Image (cartoon, rainbow, N blue to C red; front, side, top):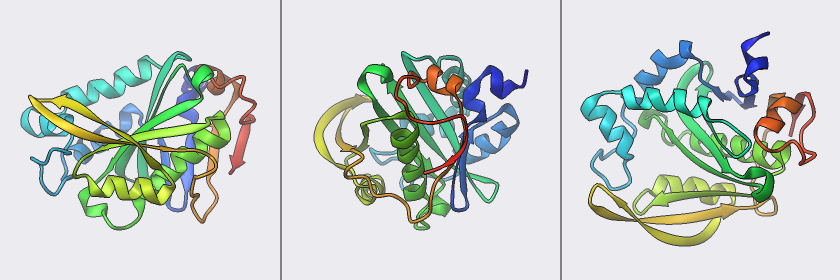
Length: 227
């Protein structure tokens, strides 16, 4: 059997304009290391700069590589994380995560993302979020998508607003001995702002839906689709 038949998430590809989103394979990890060691934040010491990204810069990428392998190994209907590489005309320019816990009951996804600093201002962050959310709503049967951004991360908040997210409260997080204010946001199918171009989705199969706890949602059919 092919690897994407044994592990269905490897067969999933989302295509929107020049972007394609898919799980990384081991052959992509050299490009992944180059991505996560590149500049992502203007100020690497800002509160909203990811702690894991600072760790990569300080001690190396091993823990981030382990996260890639761990995320694949832990996918189940009870909890999953799809760590999707974002490729622009074949070049890895960012990552878009889509996560869920008890999706079959909650029908809710969470997300996180980043793009290389040299890609800022091109609309890549907006398109990749629109691709992930459209997939969740149209193919998994999600009824809400959540995200959050640390105070000061204006770019992330701006992307969320463009995609139709609405404020959903704040939380104080503890990180490195600091209290960080997180802005929670939520989008539903009714408020979702879609991309101008249709999303193409390849690799949605009954096996994938079952693995993600979406087998009973009625969303998605085997084969290639557009949404």
